[in-house]
Image (tube, rainbow, N blue to C red; front, side):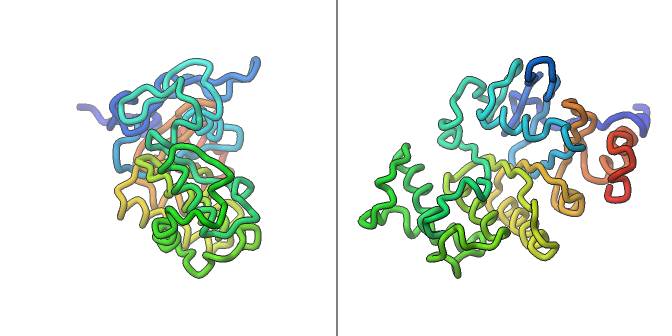
Length: 270
């Protein structure tokens, strides 16, 4: 077999979309004449930690929104553990084993850390959300919520209101709420955004621990290349809505197409 040209984009050799823990096949999303995601196919094997990177405007968040059902793809399919879920509503997907980390503005800001996690635990158990879950006589899910808070390092803040947490701890709470749905596939959208270097390191270590100890399939969008290169099994690179490379960190870092897409602006970081 001849050695592939080092300037050619890396090709994902592992999982076809329909056979993967998480897959998209020929997925396209347009907004009028703007093509945000253009015929993207990828398969993330069970238990892999996959990073999705790319320049601003590459289509990363649009891809995530199509995967989670926040947006409907214009064309193509989304698969979860081999089942097409393209037409499933967004609210059904957490019950099917997929979760996305909450942004800080999606927290119940006037509720405590414990209540934020507990209400997701109980919503998952009963299959529907209700404001009645915040009433004090509900105590179902409390023990499970405390266990999840311990996983993300928030046991010292159980009674703190979410709005009073530092930014980094709010992001940890978002991850905890995603874990409270007991997912098989966890999507993290820029989990270290806006964090200090120290908090970024701690969060990267937390993601690694969650992945390794729970065997979750984790897919994250991340701009911090130190985080991406240090914790990812594989990296998929988007540019202008297209996949231009997928492979292990070292191969992607040296890939000429990836370097060209970043126009040298992130070449030192890569």
